[in-house]
Length: 267
Image 1 (cartoon, rainbow, N blue to C red):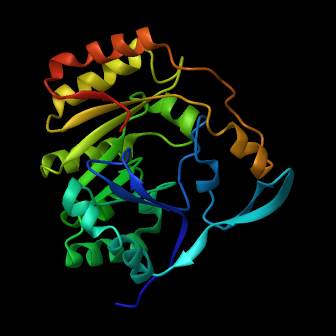
Image 2: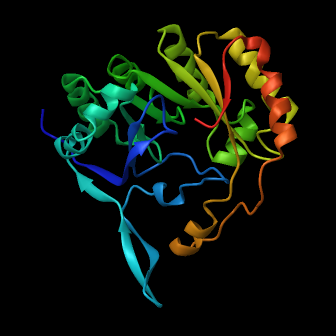
């Protein structure tokens, strides 16, 4: 098979929020969704783009443009992962492929996953679930864990706030659950949108009807992306700020308690 180059915008070593153990998170450019609250707006486009940066040297600050997104081969990515194999072995970690949506670069992702399997590197895919069903069937045997977003259970609302409906997302999730794949459900808690009782109870009903998820990760909204929109020269479509309500977060945790699977805050 001819190696396919992928567009990578970040590789983070020693990550503890992208699956179990200590991991290397590989972030791929491109996403089919346009979530209003997106915290990685630099990941959305499938093309490299400029992002303004600032660096302080002594008393002076210097502004410069940085290109977000660089082409890499599967072997180049795996070479980065190999550096951390002793850490994976010690901590039970591995490689997590995120974005954006890593499935949008399917051919590249598949080749990297094949090489990880050959190197015995455990893998996770952090996904919004919006990709062709046959692609998820193809990567499932090569993937040790899926970090699977469930944002909105109502299809109309899902399209309003993300740009696509959720029919394919739910279909892929049902298939993976039926195949006994390891899955952590991730629910972003967006005030007034995804954290309503109606939406959360709808997600709970779905998970009661389609059992098999290993745990639920609640991801409270944060405004870390605010400066990114400025540096990209884009308008931020979602301007909430401040810490998420801790009392509400505790109540939401209790909402899922009778699913008899762990409910954590963060990933």
